[in-house]
Image (cartoon, rainbow, N blue to C red):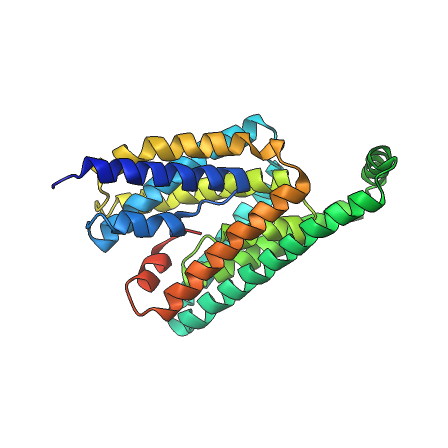
Amino acid sequence: MEINFIYILFLSFIGFIISFIGGMVGLVLGIIRLPFILSTGISVPESVETNIGVSTLGAITAAIQHLRNKNISFTIFIIMAITGAIGAFIGASLTKTVPINFFLILVGLIISYESFILLKGSTNIKRNKKINKKNNNDKDITEYNSRFNQKSIEKIYYDIFIQSISGFLIGILGGLVGLVLGSIRLPAMIKILNTEPKIAVGTNMLISSVMGMSGFLGHLINNEINFLYLIVLGPSTMIGGFLGAKYTNRLSTSTLKKLIGIVLAIVAVVIFISTIIDTNILFIIQLFSLC
């Protein structure tokens, strides 16, 4: 195989940038990285499986950094990972009986809506800060501690129920279209489960890394991974994910929400394009995870 080292360096740089942004906002973004790997000329299955491997490496290092920064809720992780896996199994079994294009468009619409809500919410946060700037910090801390202390067993059960239902439904939809759907899970954690954005980012990245490892091992059996590109592109992706995750805690809540919203909007556009263009892209994103 003839290797263009200049182009490899370019791919490594692109992989670093994508992984850096993904690590910072809690998304794998393999669906954005995939076209660049396809451009190398290796086969579609080989590109897909190599991309999964590279994306998973970046997700793992990002998850490790988030773990160090205490950005992970293991309760949400366990509940949503288990219920999501069950939902994905059921969804995958229904794939042949449902219109995949319809559900992919539905996924794109959901992500677009969540992007809009997060961008709108980040603006509202800034407005509220300007209006209630005086004594806001002390009041917020007091109210948070009060709510936490008054949390009843019934409220805990309710939280577990909502987390389970959210994970299960996202799992079913993901199983139907062949995606991990971290791009839906992340904003759901923030808006539905009321999880602190940085905790949602870290937890979503941990779930994605575990699911990525599972998918990568499954594809490893097919023996179509291009280990040369995996070895060459892996390090920059791992470094990018690790460094990106390091910056999550340095961002304000409003800025983090805004960044997540912008990235989700880009992911939605890619999904819409993939459903419109009659190429292998639709087949590719259905093979696994990638968003």
